[in-house]
Image (cartoon, rainbow, N blue to C red; front, side, top):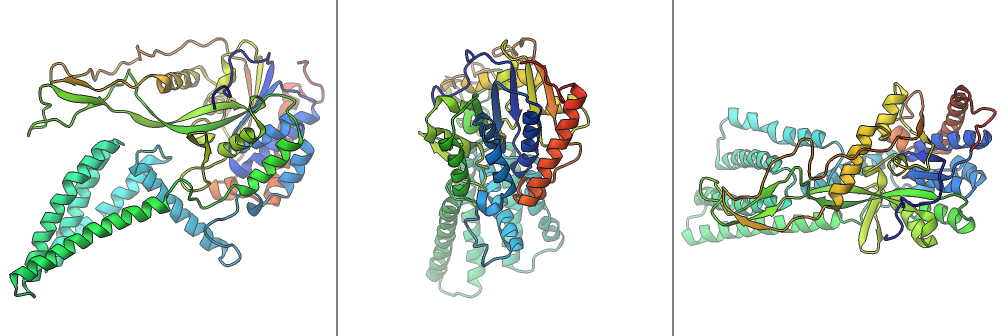
Length: 493
């Protein structure tokens, strides 16, 4: 994707349109766009994330009439057909339940691998509840047989593993070391327990050892088989929904039209970063008290995060533009398959920047930004903060971009005294916050009430919901433009 990102020296811009992502709620944004067209408002550039990328293409290619037909005839099968279950053989309730369980498991799998996931505190609470709930019953009631002791001790070990696992805070390498040390020890403990249990029924000592050995081998093989099955089931190309139909719709718009104004879409990729103002170093060469040894090897601890990339569709080939649009709407964690461009894998830009206003804020050639958001807010200030259109939010985004480009340092040798610095700089000094230029005028457009939750709104791909949302977006935007003085007359560009 080299050379396709937003350029600081692009064409002269005055008024730009930014469209947030939100699945089927994007019909509301399309209604807003119809009001802009009716008021003869023109934009010199348009940017969008996820469904906002699709709407951005419709505006920049002057395909609003095609967009009306597309949104009014939209359905789940015309956007994201189901891959795992045949809708003709299974009910909608079963498919939704199956998809929810699969996505939840994918989120746990992603969390185990250190991938940033939404609702991390909620998942920690649920997993902690899974371990904590049966433990008090096992401790209160003393086991009456050897199997009961094994179950109780296994739960205690699982709780200990959970506490250590959360304490490692996404460090994949340390987690592997923890498992490599804990599991063999537990298998030895389990072997002794099974040896005592088998001694009640099997008289021959060599037969006891044979049975225990077979049981331990079976446990190891089952764990290995489970890991391989999960790795295959949760592979990147596995997902509940397919994007083939969406690709057809995007191809029909891009291949049959040309771009009249620049169109930017947001895609995201995973990246390991090292913050020099919050350095974290670790070593495995410690003594029995946990103190690092002299001359031990310290290596930097990175954090995996989602990095947004803003792509100008007018500067790349048609096929690459189609792929970028698909990537911008590729909801991760097993919902929609990711898109591979070159050697990198990209997903929905909403994981990193759901409202791509950042590239337009610190520019001299932008005077006004119209932002269409798909969630209700109490005030315009709250909407601007949620969209990242404030100085503080821009500084955070700017610094995150610089941290992502900061080179990861190499491993170093040192002891307790000459260990690498773990000092945290607050405020940051190595990569300090930048001072932006005066921001352009930002005007948010958003619904007064909720458009629905994830199931009733984001994934509600139906013509009826889309038509109602379009009408609602048109009416809200028309009233907003009237209050701003844009309707029926328009300020000059």
